[in-house]
Length: 508
Image (cartoon, rainbow, N blue to C red):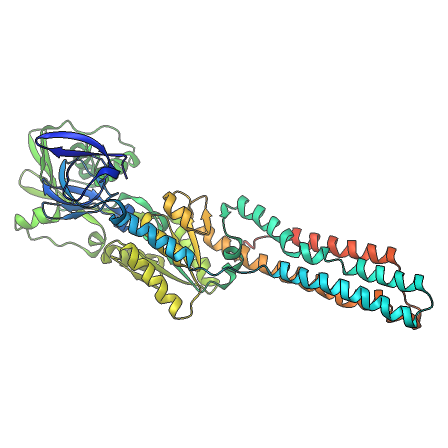
């Protein structure tokens, strides 16, 4: 949210802190500013970027009477908005409260090693005293009884058991950091071996989070793809609209830096832009504008999977292009690896169904939910958990925060918002979905090492304690306190070496 809001009162504009906003205040929202409160548009119209809140990658057109959400960003228009909710009633604050409630509902897991070490301490004292009492009555001397008790106490010292988990944790944390994983919650990390469903946000997680030209089609043989891009870029070069940025990036990718000179430029409200290039009127317009001209065109499914703009030169439709939020290259590899690990992959996005289906089909996901708001994302996670699934959620936006907090394991993309990162258990520093597979592989390997260390530490004691107590005394086998100390130290060294052998399998 911005720090201040522009209140329109009696014909003048006053800047006030957003904490002082009240229901009914009329606000002026300048170009590219964030909306300071939930409200309703009362004057003008324009496009808002609501992706931070809803996950919808395409800017949404707002006209008088439409509701706007605090925190969303205005495009290049100027709007007048009347406040309908502010302060604690803001939708953004409700999202934060959902995060707090979901975090508070998580159970606390007691450390297995701490519990085992406490038990072993009791066992050491009890075994030592029992050994002493036995040999006092049946042993050759008091010195012998004291020696047996000392040997038992030394061998039973829970060093190895006490270090079994912390050593593995220290090594795994170091490996995780080197692989771009920041672990905020150790219990969640160690539980990653249990994941059965991974739910992904789309925008900014599986996709790059910005528009790019996906497809260019020419309807006129005199205009090729480069011509269409150059003419479109000439009209859009001064705009900050996400679609304009996508077109300009496409121009750069073609190795072109210069465009045509444009005169008589003007914005077609809610429909596109137009200007004169080399004496011809050139328009870059929306699908709705084309329909108003009653032009009969065949739009392929490939174009429909993104935001479509049409290029008209004079009175002739010469081309069209589809712009979409490009899928990250690493997303394909990530989904493939996760499926090999037996994990079901779903997508939960606020984006529209056509775009969601396209992304889901390309990545071969197990399913998707589209056009869902933050509280609905949380509900979808609860649905999975209600079926007995162990759910991990990966996202980057404020709209993902409640779901991240509700999930058994919340994984935030490092380039995401502070709220998402605070709600998550693990952060992907490099913002790559491939790191989710690395996380699960490391989690499984870490769990194996912990179990190996615990088995060794407890198994060693099960054998060493009876020998130290003198059960084979009559057979001539006796462990001295010095040998007991050496064995105790050796068990700790073995646990440390085993922890150091931990690594992520890269061949999965």
